[in-house]
Length: 114
Image (cartoon, rainbow, N blue to C red; front, side):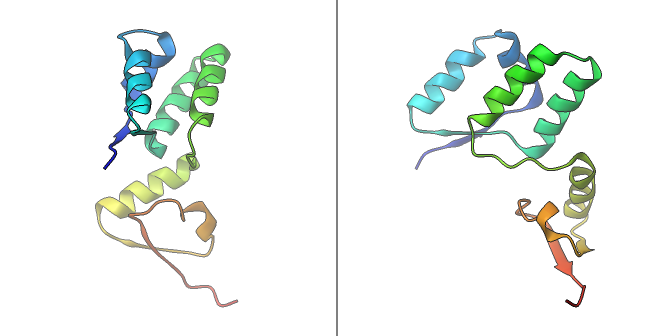
């Protein structure tokens, strides 16, 4: 069975800077048939930090890298909500399921009658 590697924020930062041999490691993982994953919180951290320092060049590079994977992004407020509900095993009561449907470990219910 192929492995799935989830990249942390610092690993993606090294990749974007072209340091620590990360590019070659990612390439080898993919050549072995394994998969790469960028979780929504890591995506948020990278994007937030690059926007904060107004580094458009790195932001473009990150979006290009991120676009090579079949990944779903999640809005920043939704990440904060979901992480809290997952940590405490709460059930989130919502009516806009599309914002949270990609978070597999989140329990939610739609209470709105349609």
